[in-house]
Length: 61
Image 1 (cartoon, rainbow, N blue to C red):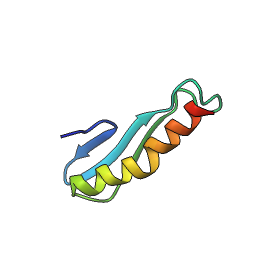
Image 2: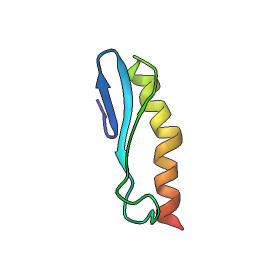
Image 3: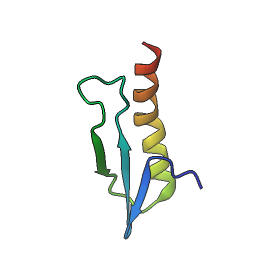
Image 4: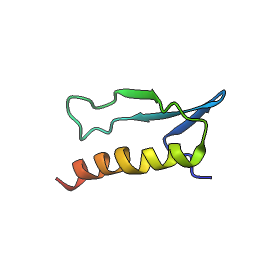
């Protein structure tokens, strides 16, 4: 089970990550957002669709 940047509290999955240094205005800012789902596959899908590309785009440009 790949839980990188995912946290389960009770019956709900959360996105839990810290912005890297390359984000000058947000560097070091910790983010914890409820994904409002109890399903691991949905939580992983949301992370893979939105957060991973966001972090990858900044490293590419």
